[in-house]
Length: 89
Image (cartoon, rainbow, N blue to C red; front, side, top):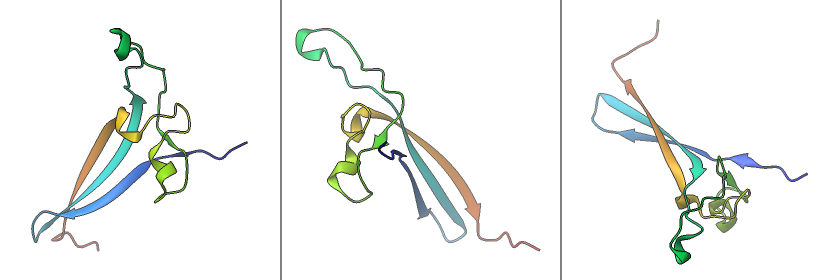
């Protein structure tokens, strides 16, 4: 059985000298309209993006479940703000 991986990206972004923002990006259900060329609306039912290859390759941008590009999947962004002034005891 082929190993499948769900794509989640974590990015650290500095907004100012005192705050740091961590973004986690997850790709949800596919929203590609497969019946657009005949004037209809039909989606394939793919519920979550699974990368078709290793990170950094062209195959990582296509979904292993439905074959669509990652851009057709709904993007969910979670942001977490961290303060540099916080020092753990």
